[in-house]
Length: 184
Image (cartoon, rainbow, N blue to C red):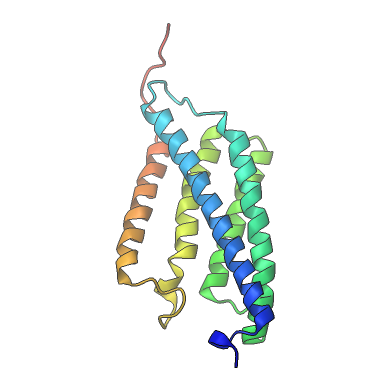
């Protein structure tokens, strides 16, 4: 019997899967920070609807990096799942979280290809914080038994606060500003 019941080649696949998914989710949280920055500067920067167009290349780059890591992580995860459970896909809450992040990333990159406004991209990035936080930490809420993705009850209070703050930022970005443009 191997350590932790993991076959050696499966251990490396699991390690690669974990690294790739963590890198993807971290990149999406960075995208969320870009969105928060753009939302706050548009709201409190003094100029009405002054969304930051210089964020578009960074959002596109980090979105593609995140998508690449997510695809690689899912490929590794499929093989780990096949080794451990006998199926590549089991409709597990973690897999459904992955699918939600994949759909969100595809939507973000899709609106950028269609030259959507900077405001839409920034708000999508803030929404990505919610999607990824639920996919990463929220899976422990819906799983029936505490396991590898159970982070303790304390984390769910922080998750609730994090989601609440991001929802407030989404509303803040959606509501149009009433400030007058600064004229010089």
